[in-house]
Image (cartoon, rainbow, N blue to C red; front, side):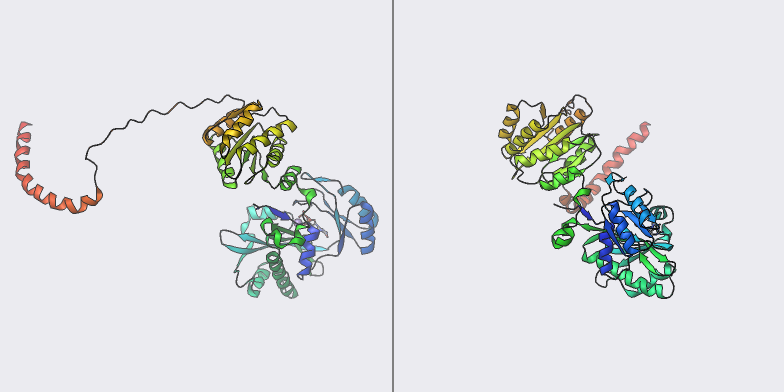
Length: 441
Ligand code: GDP
Ligand code: MN
């Protein structure tokens, strides 16, 4: 199981871009203010000190600042290091030579699933307001679909360059940047490769001032170099813990913690929780053949979420044995005592043994035999309500039918012949019966 993404830092993305011939500013990464000062004095120019955290909108959050000299660079770095930007602590800053910005362009490569093509997007109105532009003036965003067999064609790059209003040498330079970005996107197995802003400097040159690459975790095995780059600091502790135990875990914002084996079953469980008016706190697939240790880790992760008001276990024992799961639940509850109500549905391999373990541990848990019942119990428990079993549906009464059932196959062939003969015979009868009725009126 994968499906998650690996985000690269700005400085890492820009280094990759540079390999593909995209011009980037000169600069280095610092983890202390003193280092930032040193880099600034080596560069000997105005610099920009940029927080390296894996979220967008650093500029607006005050995480990007220009410094005129090494002293200022040190002061600014002092402020930015340790800053909290959207829940992430800044541990590194990039000290780049400052660009003289005339215009900010947006250039990105994404997967357009609807078109089943990689798409290059560009806008002359790039920079920090690009999301706003996309929302309010989508016509300002140029989109070019790329044929996977042809790649990005020169004419397409020129088309974008003209639409951006680039002139002279800029058009040729833009071609190098666009094809480099497309190549980098493919070579990294990326889901996104973006330069925002790609600036036009005072001298009229193009320069990639910011960079972002997001790669697909499913392709990580092909990129040991990129996998090494994964910034564990940036993962939430729950996600890191889940990864350590080989659990697929995604935190959501509901109240019902779900522990399920199998991704499809996990999705179904979440859907049914929703159907009965609840809201899942997470997606969690403990996988096949999960050991008690793994189950205990999963439960610890679920219970670490303060939003969780009830936990729903939906385990379909196959390779996963229900007794192992039960042992894991008991072990985890010894480590992490909780008041949260638990609803457990265990079916399949060793379910009796599993139930016996839970009963023996005198846990305050509710059990359920069907998923519907389990979901209803969990939804009620999360609201602090008692589960009321639904009134049974009215009994179905079986009435055996006579031979009035129409057989379609017989209808076509048998009817016309029968009709004709009936009509001929019926006509006189009809007349005879109708007349007396009319008279009677
Ligand atoms: P983001 O906000 O996280 O996307 O960070 P960016 O790297 O894109 O920086 C945000 C904004 O800071 C940019 O849109 C620029 O306006 C500004 N900025 C970034 N680098 C420089 C620079 O070298 N010089 C100047 N003058 N402004 C910069
Ligand atoms: Mn940016």
